[in-house]
Length: 228
Image (cartoon, rainbow, N blue to C red):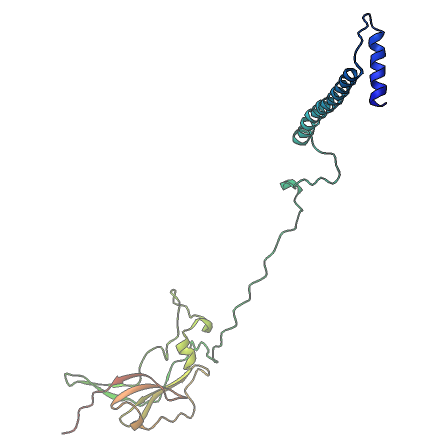
């Protein structure tokens, strides 16, 4: 319907009313346009109100559903609680590697053997002029390590110094006489031992030597008086 048809229709309605105003067609058309504009505005306003009402209803329902009711969706993930943790068997730690067996250099516990004296002695002079004869020296080179109860320790627990020097000899350096020798590997004397020349050893002393290397392990002065 165009504007002219709308104006004519309105004019006919007005004439059919109890009163019969003779309106100008231009005025009737202007009113008709206003009425149509108001209808459009009313429709828009009504749609907006309806939209607000829908939002006001849907949003609280959605929030309430999300906050209070559990979801029934199959793809919802729920963190596992302590009772949901997978059960595992008892863990066992790997065994610690054992320490390598200690090299004892062939040393044995010679419980019934001692350093073998050769029968030779050396004269020890004291400051007061007295003397006494020495057939050997006592020390770690011919002793057997023991525990606090007096029992012999296993060779694996002996000091490294003993294991490094299993065979020793005690020598008097004035004449180069061997006083005693001992080999912990055979629990006997050092077979075929020949001492170094006296001039290569500490002078006027009794020395304990490594029977193989000639290293001086201990020494004690003889204090032999010099000849005037």
